[in-house]
Image (tube, rainbow, N blue to C red; front, side):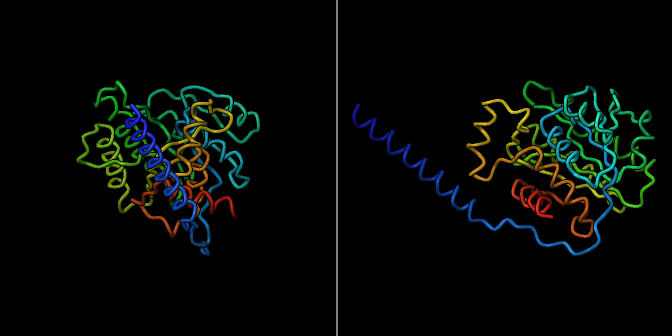
Length: 269
């Protein structure tokens, strides 16, 4: 029994030491984005899809705080407190939309947007592959097809929340589908005025207003390891990469470190 306790204590100490070593490496890592000297792309009008979810709520929070954005078109199946707040401020125009394979009803809303921030998604737990692919591949693919057909802007960008640790040969269905989604969108935009940028975060911490105790604990544990970020940081990174039109091209991908880097650049200017 005493020997077992010593082994457990030794293993625990090893885990703690490893955690501290990784945390130190992350804390001392240079994660500052390069300065951007070129003229910035327009970001006066945007659209957010999925604003009722964890990531989308953070994106909307960041967009509401951006004084350069004049109009936010929120396309959603339901209203939230944050969306209602944005509508009351006059900055958000909410459209209830139910069919994400047909966007005919919202052509007027999306025709004039500079960028679309796409946060529609669901957990793969208990979900059949066909349904998961429908939501993560077919929904955004159909949208960009219609958007590029009605857009009045000379240059537009589509920002897609994907996931970390994904590959085409993964055993996990969701990982294969997310790669398929990225590739489908990149291939569609190739050679057009559309840029598609994928975001591959690890753990996404909800906004302060939405987070419960368990989520706060998880975020606090993972953040020092460099595998957690706040939902609004994704929105800040999206706005920064949108404006850096010469730096980011179709097919670019940002992991957690990249998202944090450009979120920081956004906050600094």
